[in-house]
Length: 328
Image (cartoon, rainbow, N blue to C red; front, top):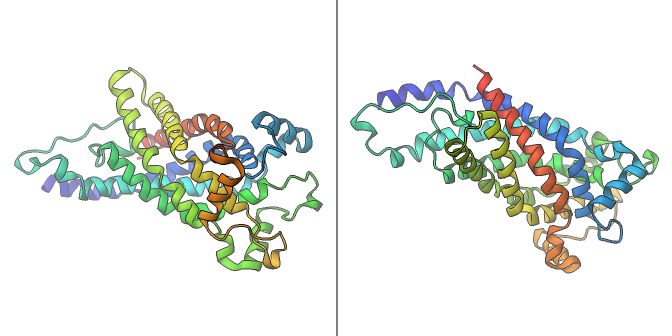
């Protein structure tokens, strides 16, 4: 056990790596994924009378607003994704270690006190788990994912709220838009409704990110499988496991994301004068989606989201794991 106690301070001293590497993940994710996200949000928050499908939405956006229209609302997530991925992946790294040391360690190595501890491999496809958390079961990674998702939700909720409101401003003329930009959007919402207005959709965000269990649990499954059954390099494993696990995540979480977007783009009303609020809570928004589109309504806009999930998250995790391996 002395060896275990010695290892803990060394592991804890490297907690900073996940937070630094997460910044690079956020940059990669936004660069590749934001145009897909804009199309997704527009399809999620309108009915078929405006856009018949993803392709028509892309063409109409480019025709009316130019290519820059696909990057509308990119400023909040550019800053936000850097910060959010730093917090999410940094806290994920910490939670993996804490779970490994305090919850799963004795369960998985019951005879460790009877002899020397076999050190984990120094290099692996998941750089963030190359030491203390290397023995976590896949569901342990999933639990760490839920905890990291809840942690980052308090940053993600306002960022995604502001981004969504900017993305559904369809006018090409700035003078016809309610919000001139992200700071103006925050200022107006905060001025009219205070902090609760800025944090509109927090519960929906927490619920949505509980599905991180499937993302990070499957990421570990794919990483182990690719390492054991292929000769792929660590970056290649990160790419494929990152892309595939992101698609697992969206297949399980997408309906909750549709409801979240409805809540975040619902008029707030009051002094803001942006319309009359439609939903008092998450359940009302979920019922409205079903009432307007049936079961298919929960999957509106899924194609651009699914297409975005693989490249954006694959590159994000290649960047994250690569920086994790590089940092001292």
